[in-house]
Image (cartoon, rainbow, N blue to C red; front, side, top):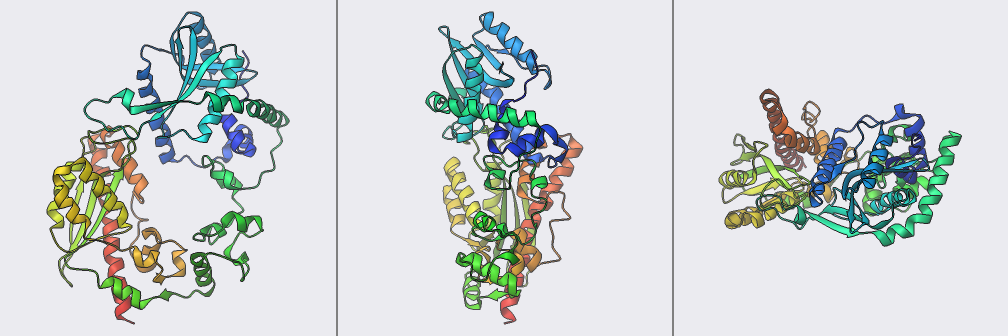
Length: 492
């Protein structure tokens, strides 16, 4: 059997952007550096796929011995079918140099059913497209499919005790949609094969397809001539692609009379003038809401695809860490407290107890984008109702320090249209930076915590300290930003 020209993944590359497929095949060295977070997502998807096999136990695995031997997998699948196998995992098929592997193939009463497993909580359009390719290859290989379905995570399932695999997953037939896609699939295969035969790089401009349905891993190459600073996509609520289609790339290119949303227009105006905007009255009103003691608080969370603990659902935000700086009264020395789970057991109840103890019963609790913390606490109330009274009281005391920046009562052109603490901090407190930390953003913190249980003792100790230092800077950043905001108003 000859080696395949297209696989399911490369076919999907070609559907998203023919240039992505061409670069993958002929210029792979131009790929972006590997994204550790993306690799973790792929690994989670693999684990979900293995769990889903339990829906159809007793199957035979037809996986190839390595990624270069898929034709052996095709041959193994053929022999398993002929031998009367009823469940095959990773069944592989090839038709006219197009290869696909199916997560689960099941025979019932001598009829075949195909199941593709996805680590999401819904059936997305791209899943229909790749399943349509699978249907095309499998049926043209001579195996008639009675049905084809997507198996995906049920985000309404709440774990209680051992995982209930049947409740963990939803299964939706997509046969009707797949049959409608067949003419497109046939035509697209021909189109992509011709392109690969000619070995001529497609002329493709950048566009929304660069990140839809997935972020392309050749963006560094295709966007290399696009300005990285102060480009049209840095405009808050700006018509990015509309501006690009009109020939604009940099903020300097946009005509003075171009119609923009109020926020985008304000951002552009302050970029051009370099002026800082301060609404003293609004900020003074905001600062008057603060009541001592002040509690500067920040959560870090994980979102396991498969619920690991009782009273949790797929992709639920689970707080595993917090940092807390306390200022008891004006001029008082700062106190710092923290909590960090062990990476093995459910951290939430211990976190709740520590949080209730430290946050007391009065004083303002300060967060950045505090709606996130409040939402997490509301979910903690649902999962641990015996703490409802204390947690509900905590949720009544929040003040969102992001508000004056999000509302643009204070706007600096170097914020670049964003009210993120990562944009505000370098302007407000230039001597405080995340750049010296090993962990510099929340996504990395979540990934490091999720992997703690798999590390040796020495590595765990190092990474726990890194997590504590990162979360501590989040709350210290809020302390310093508030101090600078107060000083700014005093000086007016």
